[in-house]
Amino acid sequence: MYILGISPTLNASAVLMKDNEVIFAIQEERLSRMKNHAGFPLLSIKEALAFAGISSKDIDHVAVGGMTSKVPASRESDLRKFHNRYSRIRQQCFGIKEKSDFSIEKVFNLFASLGTSNAKKEKDLNDFLKELGIQDKTTRFDHHLCHAASAYYGLSSADKNEEYLVFSMDGGGDGKTSAVYKGKNNKLELIAQSDSFSPACLYAHITYIMGFMPHEHEYKLMGLAPYASPKYSKAVYDMLSNFIGFSPNNPLVFNNGKYTDVSNSKGHGKQELIKDLFIATSNVRFDNLASGLQMLAEDVAVKWIKAGVAATGIKKVLLTGGFFMNVKANKLIAALPEVEFVNCFPSCGDETNAFGAAFLAWNKFKKEGSPDIKFGPFCLGSNASDDIEEAKKKYADKVDFRVSDKINEDVADMLIQRKIVARCSGRMEFGARALGNRSIIAAPDDMRIINIINAAIKKRDFWMPFAPAMIREKAEMLVKIPPANQKAGSPYMMFTFDAIQGESEKFMAGIHQADKTARSQLVTKEIYPEFHDLITKFYEKTGIPSVLNTSFNLHGYPIVKGACDAVDVYLNSALDVLIVDNVIITRKNS
Image (cartoon, rainbow, N blue to C red; front, side, top):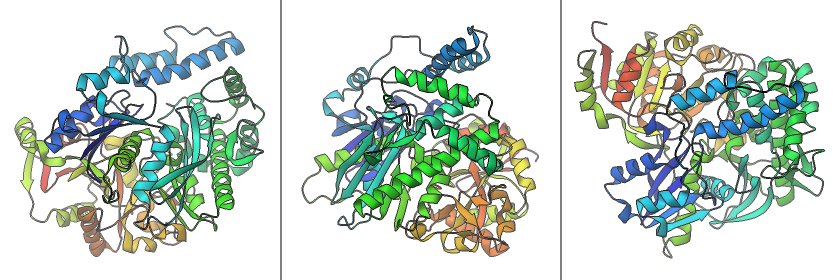
């Protein structure tokens, strides 16, 4: 049985299952080369079918993440919703009538010039499905149910008698911004849901107010937050608490503090809430605003999970939905004494609803006695060397290609020599995190490497930390892993951990400089055999069981897909060496 899962959202994606296992998954951005590509994942579907060597006629079931037929026309259309709301507020507050040359408008015009604008009549989901001839095979699933399904079917143990609490929260979908489910015996039971202006919504709006891209740059505020003084952050926390709260009748349901009649999906009261939020934050210093927001997000998340455990007695927790890309909140949840086990679905924004939809379809349509869903590696995309021969021809006059029979040992030696290495190896990882296969890696024990990498390619905001990848069996030499994380670890970089005092010098370039936490990827032999072997060889030579890991992409562009993308980025940066599988690529005469 072939099941095609699709997520026609702000970060469109497609997943292909063969029976109980995902065999391919990719985001539209990796093919269109437009960051967070919004819309119908047509290129992704074609890539998935080509990978499997099948056509759309061979698909048995199409599973859609979400009930709506509306497909976003572009990333620009989502940004314009924010712009239009706040344009009205600025005009009301300051008498400013924004014109086409207003600075934010230039941002949208830039998006249009890059090809994200769509002047044609917008198609809906049915139009796309009909064009592919798959509309009659399609089943749609609720947005938050898809989030919950991704986590429960993807991360629960083989023993389906075990019971889990699944928490989903994001900016909204199908009329809800959060939901709580019980998962047991391969079934999910909804026990609470909200349509409030959620903590995730609050985070998105303050991201916009601070001049960043909502639904994309929230992580920048999270990274900035630890630099502020807690004294000033607490005042911001108290102010923002007016906009977020819990129902007095059910602590698993959110409400909007004093804005009791506001829902996120409809109602006139939302504009009043946003206007008050804009005014309240207008004169707040940027770092204090980020810190107070993060403090509130963490506090609300912890209270929500504690209330769920208290209400049900279930101590195994699964997290999903875009809010839980907040690895600092996830860290505090893992530290709760009442939480026995915790895990978070990797890259748990709407892009992974394609997984949840496909999982739900398997359980709906499988034959009796069929196996349960098998999920493990998240490197499910194109192979790095699919286009290596094309790259050799295209770039023969610019780079040299040399095959190595001991590639991981060679790379370990390069890292020791303080070279910055771009690694494009094996199958491309899905989602927002580079997990070693499309990564820039470096030695983690030299702070100077951060400025070198930023100057060479990344151009990250100066306050943003890089992350370490470390072999799981030696990770506790460097970081403290709480009991709730022990079983699952953090193979997908969805939690932060405290650095062990006195050991941070060994990976100082991979920790947050203000709070000494690390967003560690705990690399196992089972999930990442080649990357694990590389880090092991580096450890054997240096005594450091970790390397610095950041995504392999030019600033503002998606992660590279294959050899041609990799060479192009290499030539447009100051990276020292490029690795494509077992091929070492260097500039001519370097």
